[in-house]
Length: 369
Image (cartoon, rainbow, N blue to C red; front, side, top):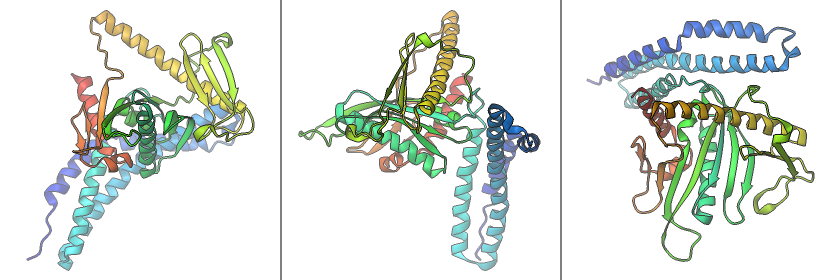
């Protein structure tokens, strides 16, 4: 007799989901949404644009958090109905559909569980990702562009808005560097585990000899600060350059000098911005990003000083964290977590969730040690 029994699997999922609900605290979440909705509905809200932005942003993030939890809860209930239907109809297709939904729900709950590990100070914020090509010539600049597309495709898969802020094209293939924003709840906490040095090994398409080429690119991930007023930047600490936005091959994409480059003289930090329409908008966006970098630098220096005083200095920033092999074995392997994929094409097309989840769990274990 045909009988589909997934009760043990569903019970395990419900147990994990119950733990997630407790951590998320759905009751408090609903109360926060009600309070923020009332504030957002105030007629004088936009009299203070800065406060209005904070309120609407917080409301949007909390609504998204609640939607993810309630959507999983609904799907769990629907799965019970789907299994009952499959057993009543004695239907293999319905049984296959139920198993597929179980697999999908397992992945969704695993992702929710990972999100409960994101409790850092800035984890809820949007992410600013900067990719820079390293050693390896044209292969490195091409690799940097491949990584940029990988993260933008990841955002697209999740329907997260992404905005390219600045791109510096290489004379040959690819890009020297690029900076872009991904807007999503917990975008920084999620993507921060992608920071580090990435390595590509392949047969170079740019060389005449059929030899393996190794190239590198650096990925930096920082949170987008709504404001960074803790950092004051004197005008004489800044050099401001304006120029025309450019595309691949140096092609001008703007007839006016609207792009802005800020150089912070004491630290050497350089911020370029060419996404906005006017010079004033680009300067404001560049200044906010510069303030963010300086604030984070200040916190990193404070943390490093504490480690030094404690006699425990670990130089881990910039260490190679993932390798992409596009010859022979065709493999992507994370050197921190050991997670790997035998389908590099899928990874470069944005299939990163398993790598990111493994990275977040690895970081949590490392912090607890």
